[in-house]
Image 1 (cartoon, helix red, strand yellow):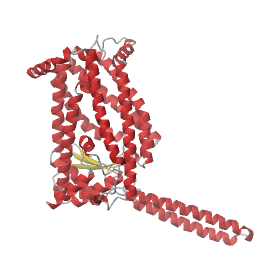
Image 2: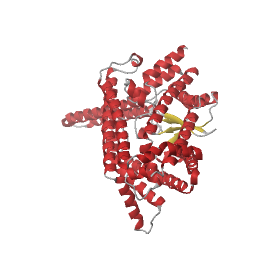
Image 3: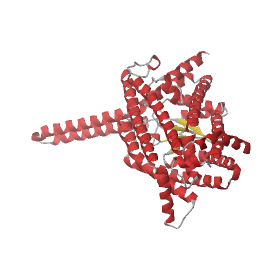
Image 4: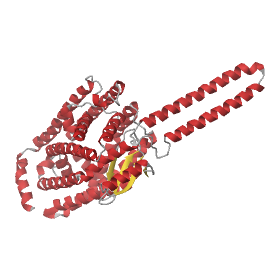
Length: 514
């Protein structure tokens, strides 16, 4: 271990020969190079959206030209929003760094503590520093988040949140993030302080263990704070899932449905858990006609029938009343009856429209099963375990690099810290700026690997006889989520962790023929 750190220190010794100002502008310039590259890719994708296309043959059975135009409009709106938001964040970050926001906030954190006679407490000062950063980030992010949900998503029919829900959700997210982040960073800084020459090993072990703990407590205790999770009701879908899990020896413990419909009309499915306690989570928007409140199609139709019966009864009473009315009131009575009938017809028509919209969304039971079969493929092929192993190996590598760099004064001086070298600032500088080139390459490699895994999981579902159902499900999800089916190849290669729908449908068709 000592040899590893010594080798890395020698490798990065060239940094000591660079002037702090030159190093600062060099690191900042690289962030802009990456940004310009991503804006270029986004421009290519934007041009792809603007280019007129017809419905591809693979989707001709489920998508109309009007729906294609709606998907294009949604994609363009999201691209514009993301580009403006991204550019704003980059300019904001650059300006804040140029005016020396990091040393200024660190100094302010120390002054706040000194008022309460807490001097030279690095961990406490780091906590105050983080609180300021997180609160600022949350407050400045609210307008962007509000616009995204209540303007952009609302325009295209996806937002289901209320203002009250949005506010409560934002507060809960901030509190949960503060608790977890402050705890982790406090302990991490302490480990680095007392860990000696092998602190990076202890830091790596700590973050690894904490990641596994969070992976356990988040879905079981934190996620339910934000959304409602109910067991999937007994029925054909539940029975089919249990039979499939038993067939492939998947250690299924529970099946949940999350009420994602109160947030958005988008849908998803996933599983989580360790060892023999796997749990499946389905979004209610994924299952056609499903509701956690049992307001399914049958219930809605029952309500319509009740409405019709009430309407008929009211008409009979009205007819009886009309017979006893005086002749001079007959005209008024007829007008009144027509108004009531028109109102009832309008209510009935609106409810029928609501039923149709609800039941048209989502997948049939066999299609949901195919989607889960794809997810089971990730488990059977150990994709999650591979990804976890890669992330832990990568974490060890970056902590080793951190150990070789964090004592170099030039890094702190470059960002305005000449008198003090806080560990938290060292983590921020090294992980966000110095290692940025490495993270770009690593992220691209993971994206490519993820796409490979998706094809393999699709193949697993096809082998189990769910190829046709998977193809139909993918088409419906594309349509329900209003995803534009065409993508710029370079943009997709760099950004997409999943193959495009057309690529997946082509692969599924080829797999079925093999």
